[in-house]
Length: 401
Image (cartoon, rainbow, N blue to C red; front, side):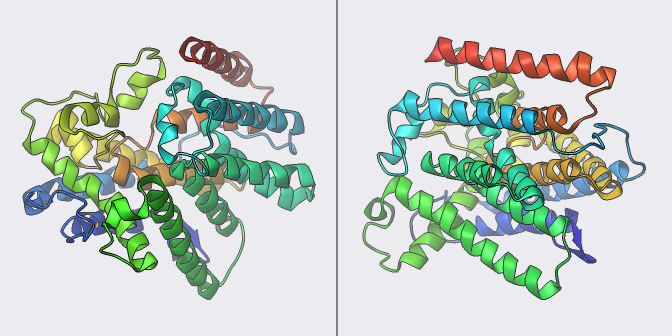
């Protein structure tokens, strides 16, 4: 992402974050998080392979712009914006009804009683995207309903303590603002510092709420800022040391049950475990799902070939989307680019593919709102997919409720 010539959100920054995450696994966390007995130096080659093939994929994807997702040249389609946004809010409210609690103000662990995961949850997971485009529509037309829509789309996931969705919404708004505006390097720097503080408060603060202050430190850390810092480091770095621990304690590949687990879970209406939940049941006695980061997730599923193939594809798709955003001035392309990039950064901790079902779902919904609705592809493919997806979400929700 280049802002007035300064690249602050591109391939290089992602690679730097990847290696910082690797180095953070060597820190001695006073909270006791992580797996201290694991020799992380043995896994240097996995990060090296991931870096090399991600860059190669990015270079290949940048050879030529690929034509896809042609946006409409017309103005705001208020009816479709409000329709999709309202459905997303309704599904989010169902989540609170399902657990009969507000985790942020009640029991922080009550969100794990939620039984409508997988595809029924996808409309609610569209809320971060709602917040991003509502904010920009408000800036354009200055109408209060769009500002209210933006605020609700951030507050409801926050009340549910869904850190990922809140972070995507807030960073997404900032990122889109910078992509589509001109600011000095000084203001960019200040915003990055402010954004880092916000991330610290969101990741660390919600972690403290989730576990409780005394349960985290046992009274050994009195400074709240130190506690927030080490909780944030633990939340980010533990996925790496845990990934190394899993690899050392399993003799078989998972063949997609982890990194491709979200695809498996799309139409899985049973309660069988996959992804982070599968690791929890096999390797821990924890009450919540346990994630491993990249490149360990790819290696766990398919060995070194998984690291090579998935890192290549991740880089290739990143550059394809980047070129589409760079060569076109429409808001929707900027949103898709930011969503994919944030999924890419989130995969550092989650270990999932950045082009996961959530991202694909959000891209399809954006196409439904902003795409060329007179085209045959829109009428014969996108519209039926959107109608069918909401129908399946309602059906699966009724089955699991």
